[in-house]
Length: 521
Image (cartoon, rainbow, N blue to C red; front, side, top):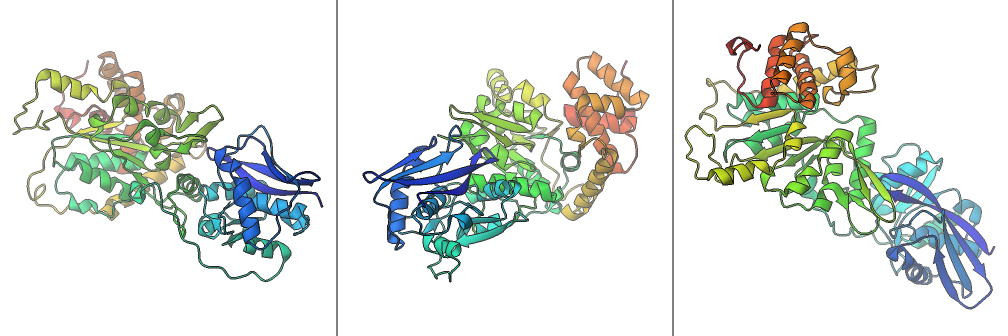
């Protein structure tokens, strides 16, 4: 049979596209041609496949061989097409049955000795194959764990091309040496979820209230204060307050991490919201995604459905920080390249931490700031106004008195997480007919039309807007935050007191009762 087909998967961002791998053997001088917009790593598959076939005990055709990857207009990148190319070639040579080959999708890179090496994005590729109707997929053994997270598709984890051919022939599968995991290019510490408890934080009533509200409603958070006041401690404990991911969100987050190379060989479904903490020196492409050829997801996509924590935020390059503006609104990021446009999900909770000035003592009760007014102004301008306007909660964190507040034992993460879960359940029930889940996600028009505040609260915010103390975006964000505070209190409607507290949380003012404030005209 001079012509045979196999199937593989191409990824553009997280979107999978089936690729038909055709192999044609014709009369002519020995030559192997690869067509279908391959990149450099894929073009080198000709040499990898030839060596792998020969070293697996099979005969490579000594005639003119043409390998076509269809659709030809779709750019192909990566080495995961090797197994499909080798099998299509051997099926065209009559070594294996072509009908069995067309019933399964295949991914995997071939070593020169015939070993099947792990690849990135196996989970996303398996999802694409399952949605396209395939019931079987062949993957490297080191990727089998993540591929088996996809329901409804049989996964064959293989160690070598010899094992693949044995599966296709229906014979006993030969034993091979266990594969050796390749070194990870991305540090696994990028996705660490701190195993810490909120009862470690003494005092900090306003800071604890801020992270509880942020976790309950999915609100962005900005913590600023002198060094050692507890900003990072509070931010790291925020992840423990958030509920587990839903099944659909777990698959989506796991697919992003698979493509980023963050899942290990014994991969399990990501069930906890990820906590991503890039260093403030991170480059633009490492934050939003990119790279040569087909773009890869960056830190903001790895933080999808979780937390993106940037410590020492003013030290990050302002242009890099400002790239967060669009994904904070849309929930996704598009990385444009000449070959294709990759779209990655990026619906994360942004948490920024900063010192008040380079010396860290500006605005503190007992500190003596040594910064000049010009230095102080430049430092504060490094976090732009548009970024701050998109942050719902802004809190100054000052050093707590030793021993906590009034000697009371702080609440643990488990206790606060229970309140957060109850608040989220109320939001899910309230928005059950809208398709949204959290207060922070509700569009402004829908918020104003169906979930209005009481007249007193509405008038209060309108006056603040008239006085220039609230922007139009800030108005909606205070309303969303007021609903979150009401959900935490377990009441059906935000009160004027809670609405006032929501404004204080956003503006950074100290949390004081409404009765203590001057009348707002």
